[in-house]
Image (cartoon, rainbow, N blue to C red; front, side):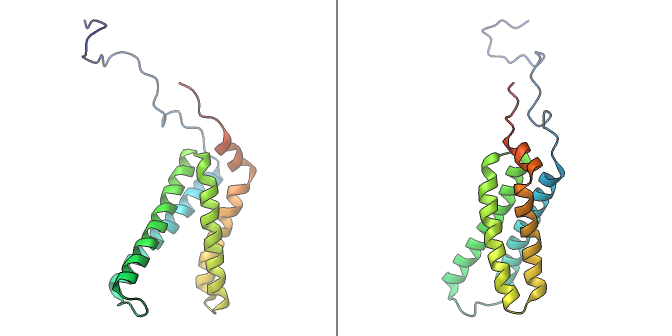
Amino acid sequence: MASDDSVQPDFNTPRPPRRFVQARPRPLGVWVLFLIHFVQGLTVVFSTIAGAVASPPQVLDTVGQIALVVLYVLFGLVLVVLGFRIFLGAQGARTPAMVLQLLIVVLSFSFLSGGAVPIGLAFLLPAALSLMLLFIRPTQVWLSEAEPLD
C-alpha cells in the first residue's frame, strides 16, 4: 500500500473519464464542416507543393516563388487546423474559418470571370456550403455549449 505522501502514482485509483470519451454528439453540419476544411487544406498544400516542384517559376524569382509556396502551405495548414478545432468544439475557430471561406469565395469569382467555370465552381460550392453551415442553428448551438466540468 502506498502512503499519501508517496511519489509513486497509484494507477488503481478511479480517474475521471477522458475528454474525448465525454464528447458531445456532433451535428451533421459539424462533420461536413470538418470534412470541407480538411479536404480544402490538404488540396491547397498538395497542389502548391506539386506545382512548385513540377513547374519552374515564370513570373517570380526563386525567393518570391518560395515565399508564395510557404504562404499557400500555411494557408492550407490553417484550414486543416480550423477544421479540427471546429470538430473539437472550439467556438473561437468559427470566425477565422468564416474569413478564410470568404477569401475562397472571392478567389472563385476571379476564376469564374476568367472563363474557368469548373475550377471556379470547385472553389465556390464548398466555400458557400461551409459558410452556410457555420451560420445554421445546430452548429451555432453546438459550438456555443459549455464544456462539461469534471
